[in-house]
Length: 77
Image (tube, rainbow, N blue to C red; front, top):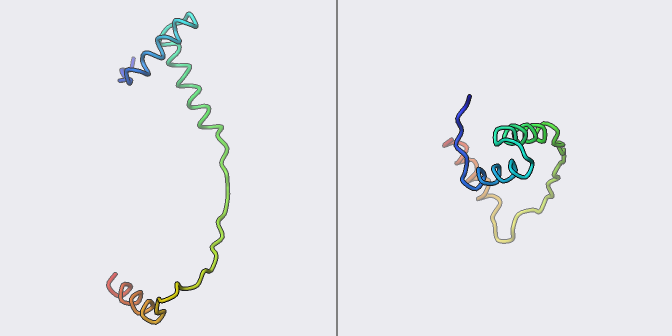
């Protein structure tokens, strides 16, 4: 036996489903948990890549000062 605390609405939904399917609260809960685990295990993994685009430095930014600030941060870290 295991005790779990369910959200009120979730508990009500399970009870209603058990009545509709003429089964027990326990049986419906176990079935839903099994389905949830199966769905997680069979979910496809999507591999994708993102390519960065060189946009350059925004107008008005001094690259020399930017590099200097970067170097200072690196020295502090």
